Image (tube, rainbow, N blue to C red; front, side):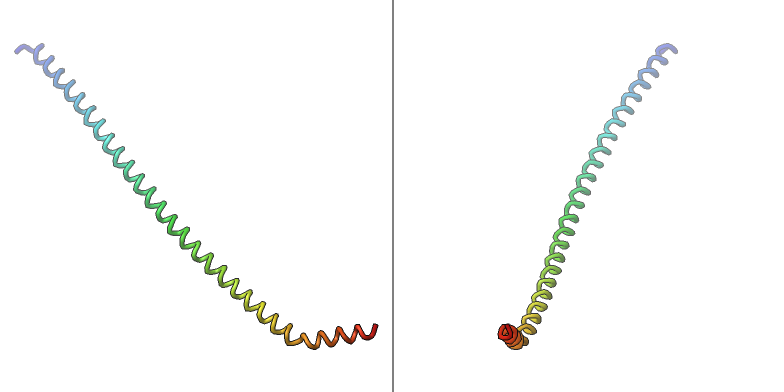
Length: 102
């Protein structure tokens, strides 16, 4: 084999090595992208599930707070009604007195 043939053979091998390296690099990039996309989708799904749980928890808390406020207002209304009923007879007597004075 002559030196020229050895040079051509070495150049061909070098070209094959470069081609294989490019191909391997493309494959590796595709694999990394696929893994990144799968990880991204997984994280989005996880985040959405967490957000849904938080929203449900906050809805329950808001409902409980609303029910507590309604119960408190109900108790206040009952107390005011009892006080009004306790003074109802006095109020009626007072009104009748004033009407009679006219």
